[in-house]
Image (cartoon, rainbow, N blue to C red):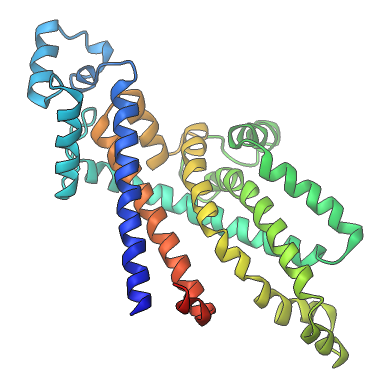
Length: 310
């Protein structure tokens, strides 16, 4: 019963997060300069007449006070209707669905690469002073480097300089390497540091000393005993991890000219395409809420004592 109550409160908090995300997005997009009616008629290049713009504003309700538009958007979204994109003239759900596969592909590739790098570096350097400092410095640089700058460096070295990978597009595995590395390296920097700290604590535990006393080699001790007990902090970092992937996808897809939800969001913001912006932001917030709920439930499974305090 306590677990169900805990889930209920978390879901209620998730609804609050979605409402906050929708409200903040509406206010930012609505009060920034630009005319969404121009996006409906084809942008500034279409050179619409004032009469046409006035007709479009009346048809889409853009001439109504902001609070009426805000209430109309919330009411529509609450009923599962995300509306039609001003710029693309297609339902928002269809526009997002057509781009989702490319972003999921990039996010999965980056997540797997980042996780494997973090585990490999942490296992190799935990408790070894000779390599620990070097690994910590590299992780600090990777975690603090802006994604766009890292992407430019990767493009300059491996695409324009060595010609190993294509600089743009999303066709074939080769085009996925640099964007995935661009997203994965900052994640690997953070996760590697957290995992090594956890490993070093576990390596001092009595059961590790006992395993070594039984003649188990250092590599086997780290892989079979220490790693499993040190993985819990990675679950804690899942929320940060997901946020980094979603935020980085916007920059990475734009920099590498890849299709995806991030690039779709950038073009929607530039056109003040409010229904599409709201759809992408709410989808990102929903995924974030669900992943954090899953993380909390995993904690209850890992440590049943938490059920008493949930």
